[in-house]
Every structure is written in C-alpha cells, then in structure tokens.
Amino acid sequence: MIAFDLLTGFLGSGKTTLLNAFLQLEAGSDTAVIVNEFGAIGLDQLVYQEFSDDVYLLDNGCLCCTVTHSLRETLLEIKNVAGRLDRPPLRRVVIETTGLADPLPVLHALLGDKLLMQHFSLGQVITTVDAVQGAEQLSLHLESRRQVSLAEHLVLTKIDMAAPEQLAELRRHLQHINPYAQVTLSAIGQAARSVFTSPSSEHRPLGLPRTEQSIDQYPLQHTRHQTAHTHADDISTWSAYLNTRPTWVGVSAWWHLLVQHFDSRLLRCKGLIHMDDQRPFAMIQGVGKVFHSPTFLQVWPDEDPRGRIICIGMGLDPVWLQESLRALTLTEASYRPRTLNELDKCF
Ligand SMILES: Nc1nc2c(ncn2[C@@H]2O[C@H](COP(=O)(O)OP(=O)(O)OP(=O)(O)O)[C@@H](O)[C@H]2O)c(=O)[nH]1
Image 1 (cartoon, rainbow, N blue to C red):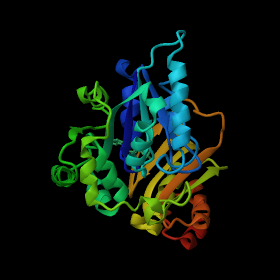
Image 2: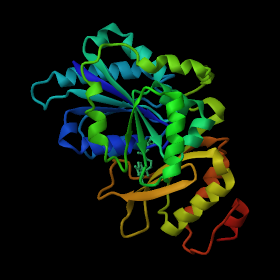
Image 3: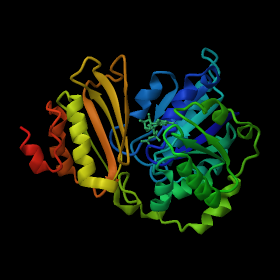
C-alpha cells in the first residue's frame, strides 16, 4: 500500500514551502508529489523537481472540478512506477491541490474508487493556514473554510511573521471551525518532518476524515465552478510570459502599482523571472498585499527560457495587467506609479 496525503490550504499559505522542505529530508526520499495549480502556467513543479524525481503535474484545471480523472490516471501510473525493482522504494504520495480547491470532492472521488483503494490508503488531509492572513482569508473565502474544516492536520505557517495576538485570534477561528484537527506551528517549512510523518497518517482505516460533519455549517457553493479558471466570488487567474528582463526597482514599482490598483482583490502572485541582475534567476511571491522575499535559483529550472508571471484575484483585468508589465523594467527607484497614466509618465 502507498499512503497518500492531501495537502491543501488557501492561496499562498505555504503548501509548497512545507512539502519542499520535506522532500529535502531523508524521510521524504520515498515520496512522490502530484501538483495541481490554478492557472495556465504552473511553477510549483519546478520547485519540487530540484529535490525529487517523482513529480507529476496534473493537467491544467482545478482538481476538485475538472481533473479528478487525470489524478486517477496519475496515481495508477505512480503505482506502476513504485512496483519497479530498479528504483528506490516509493511509499507515499502527497497531492498538493490548488489554493482554491475543495478537498471533499477529491476525497470522495479517490476513496470511492475501488481499484485505486487496492493500492493506496489515505494518510492525512493536511491544511496549511497563513498565520498572518489566515483569519481574514477564513472570513472572506468559503474555500479557505472548507479546507480547514476537512483537515486532520492544520499547519499554521509563517509563525515567524505573525504577532502573538494574530496567532491567538487565528487559533480561536480554527478551533471554532474544526476543533478536532491536530495543530502544528511552522516557520519556513521547519515542521515538515513532524507534519508528514505524523503517527496519525499511518494505518488509519479507510474513510472520510472525522471532521466531515462540521462542514455542514457552511453551505456548499462550490458548484458555481464554470471553467478551470473560474471559482466562486469571481476569482480568476491571469498569466503572461515576459519578453524583457525586469529590474528589482521595476519589480518593486510593479508590485506597488498592482496593490494600488487591486487592493484586497489581489490574492496571489508568483513569478519565475530572468532578472537584469547579478543573481538573474528569481522566484517572486506575493500573497495578498504581502510581497515575500524572493528566492534565487542557481540555474534556470525549465527548458522554456521565458520568464513568467501568474496572478490570481477577483475582477482581474487582463488588458490592465498586460499594460502594467511595463513597470518591470523601470530603473529609477523614485518612480512609484499608482496608475497606468502615472506609469506612462515614467518613460
Ligand atoms: N516567512 C515565511 N514565509 C513563508 C513561510 N511559508 C511560506 N512562506 C512564503 O510564502 C510564499 C508562498 O508560499 P508557498 O509555499 O508558495 O505557498 P503555496 O500555498 O504553495 O502557494 P500556492 O500554491 O500559490 O497556493 C513564499 O514566498 C514563501 O517563501 C513561512 O513559514 N515563513
């Protein structure tokens, strides 16, 4: 039997960081990863590929709506790969859902599949919650509440950034939504080992998580999914390839412009960028209005040499976003455009 964990959590809450930290440990060496991203251009698999050969990217689309079939095929492929004698053992699969996925239909689809369940057993449903922005996300987004309510293991991430009172407030919210889950605190993935090797993940009989009842408090509006790119509350994704080399001054100006324009409608932004800088290969990350420290890569992680940017939010305007990219090449630090008109004047 191969155990599978479902790793979920709202946009930017630290799923990739946690799992990537685990893959770098000896304990994670027998783990395959299945990634599902929201949007046309995926980046997470590039992060994982640095530390694992067993990374599977699902078709573009949302796991809970459109790609369950693709997940099934991928798991069967992993079963075959795991059976090969010429490779190290494979004992665990972690399925990272998109930050907007509802884990319940995914669990139903997997646990109700007799063939799959001959080879796989459910480990844990792990939900990451951003210690700084989690309380707001829970109050604003049904997806976030559903992810928390289904979890057996809640991982409060970014505790290095959170004030004690923020953490206390978040814990009160979580206790209310899901009083049964095990809670682990984590800073920069440091709890990865204890999360993924938690005893509760082993030898558990098949069945839905015991917290299933608690989700009844929240109406299921998830059937509003229309396409792979549309979620509740008009959340959509936009992505673009870059044909320029951004500067750090430009990235900062662009982020400022974005936050001014979209304010709290901007939920997530990430980019793999070939910078005009001594350290040229960078991953940039924005969660809500917080711009996280970029990470630098030794080598460009993909065959495709183009930089790329992905934004997720409510009411995103693709034309406006495309125009905004011009800010990325600004070189004058005093330029802080708040509108596209102001950006025009910077050139
Ligand atoms: N300071 C700090 N930053 C963190 C921590 N966990 C994650 N981050 C940062 O938060 C940003 C988002 O983290 P990810 O791990 O990509 O989040 P995710 O949930 O996989 O994001 P999506 O797949 O887009 O939903 C990155 O810039 C991370 O470096 C943490 O514990 N502390």
